[in-house]
Length: 239
Ligand SMILES: C[S@@+](CC[C@H](N)C(=O)[O-])C[C@H]1O[C@@H](n2cnc3c(N)ncnc32)[C@H](O)[C@@H]1O
Image (tube, rainbow, N blue to C red):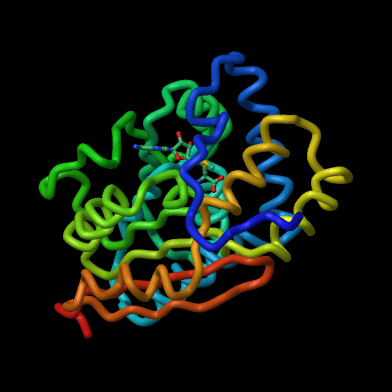
């Protein structure tokens, strides 16, 4: 019988309670980073950030990655900004202290990146004011009520905009990921979590419903290969 993805799953991901040590966590992140790199997941966020920067020229930008994991996305943004001579301060926020230790080691040669150990649900409006908030493959970890709370907060923190990059809840994605993971994914954790993540992902109609709770924000929601949605939000103080 085919999997039923009509509703978002609330099955927890193994990564959210990972107890196998920092070395094994690195191997799981290596798997996630390989998937993102092969399927172009990182470029989606980098291109969206580039668009916001182009539209809002200024001397320097502060960009915060909420749920940054091992900081791979921040390093991709740093590389892009270095190439384009764009001055940036990059901040990664994550709840997982072990992931942040991996992120710090991997980002040693990037003086523009710093990391904070914080729960994004506990952020205050005065915390981390910035130009752009990004969040990649993190929103699907949350139940609807919680994600609505932090989306509102992100839009208060970010002067220019918010970029969400997350998974489409789709049967095609689910079964193609099963095949893909046989070849490209080494850890059982990433194989299992990949499938749970897809079943916790989103339909475009879900994102449109969430967007209605932020009526003073301009929303742009696009499907991207492979089975992602990029959702760019721009507070109306700039539009
Ligand atoms: C699937 S990983 C994505 C990591 C990275 N953004 C990427 O694209 O590879 C989800 C991340 O969200 C973090 N996370 C989950 N709940 C969080 C919370 N309440 N506050 C901060 N980070 C959280 C996890 O620790 C994990 O590093």
